[in-house]
Image (cartoon, rainbow, N blue to C red; front, side, top):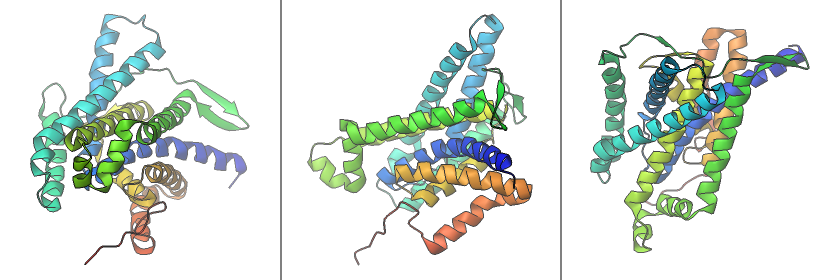
Length: 304
């Protein structure tokens, strides 16, 4: 493999991995707090993408004079809000009533919420099951650095994902809510005794996780400019693999797993497109066999 080709695929892998990492963060945050694999999380991505689609389409019908960067920033805010709201709505209506029920009940409910969102959006007359072309929030601008082709969308995907990850890390490690999140993740009952509002903390986690999924939605829609109600299924499964790869419940692990999975998929696709689609699940099997706690996860012993 030529060196320029290697770096070209590395950039493409980082771009894809950034999207996976943002989705994986939502998985790992919710699991770390309430031990739930929220399979509906990837559909929050779809909701964020459609929210931006309708918002941008409405704005562009009114005027074309708005600067693209302003349109993108407004679209990002819409995606963050839409993702956060649908995540909290799912929490209130579906997950909160099952908070202290067997985990299997919540897991099955998560699958049900996912399927409901997909079929509900597909049944709406103004959405439907067909593909829709996503509007150009930013015009692609390409340039060459050392023989490697780059564009502004790639840099935006990687840069925005890193910024959001740094912001999340700051919130978790340097704020009172972050301390509450870490306390609740360790022991809910002890956190209650210390005066921490556990339900408010869980709500915050769902809001943040949903917002990150919404951000992943706008980035994915700009990178692959077509949206449809089932657009979150495959990225969601791969992001779950990324979370497991890094260590489910571990935020830096979700970031690392997302980027590694994106790079592995791009390199595998360069040899065979079908191999690229399946590499994530091969990695999942290997991780579960060799290091089930993930790359950055710690072994946990259960008292019998």
